[in-house]
Image 1 (tube, rainbow, N blue to C red):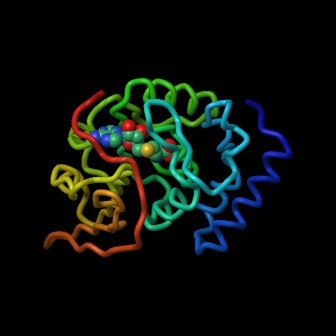
Image 2 (cartoon, helix red, strand yellow):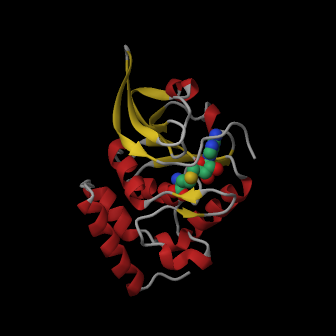
Length: 212
Ligand code: SAH
């Protein structure tokens, strides 16, 4: 799928929309303006790529809404060179945003088809995560831990203890927690423990146990 001036025009409109909804982080805005979101879509749905909505990808999963991707990225407060663990690669779109922010990204997906697709898609766009794997995000990636940042892009029933363990002291995790709808939590880890704050309600597909 090619990227054309028409796509760029649609992207500029989308960027205006997320700014109007409250996104202000310059590097996040730049990433949304640059990345061809339509390339991450199934071709039948491609024309919808620049609406601020979640859409179906394969295996009954969704590509997150652009506003949600921007919101989580902004809250995550990524600095260039940071080690970031992403749980739920999905389409790979959020992964590409993190790479544009200068992160060294480690990403895990539990659906094999999505893992394979996202890997190829990212490579075709010249986005290279440090690690992209097929696995269960509840386990994190102990071999590569600790991480500066952890982002979970599926709805967790509770905050997974294992992920807290894999966060550096001074590190941050952004994770939606809940059943039907979720509260967005920011977890900050310091040498005394964790501090958690809530940042509005969202709706994600569930974070499931084990691999598919
Ligand atoms: N960041 C993605 C969002 C995809 S939706 C994007 O921008 O496209 C959330 C994804 O999390 C789904 O692909 C789902 O399969 C995956 N997921 C759910 N539970 C998981 C787990 N335990 N480990 C890894 N991935 C998981």
